[in-house]
Image (cartoon, rainbow, N blue to C red; front, side, top):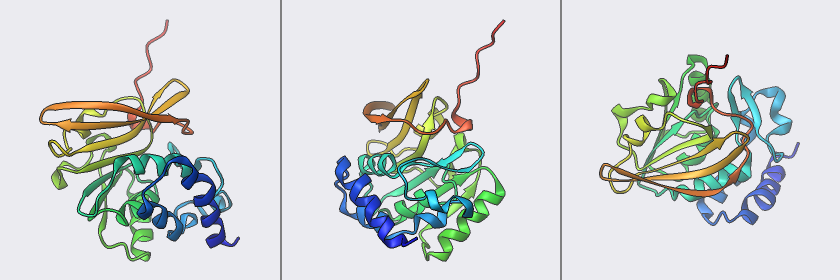
Length: 218
């Protein structure tokens, strides 16, 4: 596979036509080897228009949905970003090209190690991957200008919203309602939080830590 050609086709067909206007984001997605952040047996899927399975409960979000979500977060060069459920680190790598520092969080020690190694191999030294429960985030390193959850969620956002900087903080994610998902942006103003629906999205699943408990049935 000519990966440089595949990246260009991905950006030209899945990113630019979908209201992704941040040229820095386009450049990052053109540059970064997306295939390095998926399992070896899934590399052929890295640039197709679908979510790529990484491991149980985690997918690499399709380029269109990911790019639109990050574009709406409006990441600035001096921002401190928290990347929740980073998988093997692709979202962290892209955010590292846009922000000052990116703190990524995963729960499994092996996943944390794998993501850290991939980011280090690419020389992205403004990133750190922490092992912590996803719903807890990483309050010790905050507060954050931006929090990103590049996947489907249903609940458990309150602890993360509290880690946003007052008056400037924003969190982006895909809120699921059954099979239907909507990308959302949540903003903080003091102790109050606002929300706005961005666009429709259909991720492959909900990140387990952010699933609603199943209702008891007789």
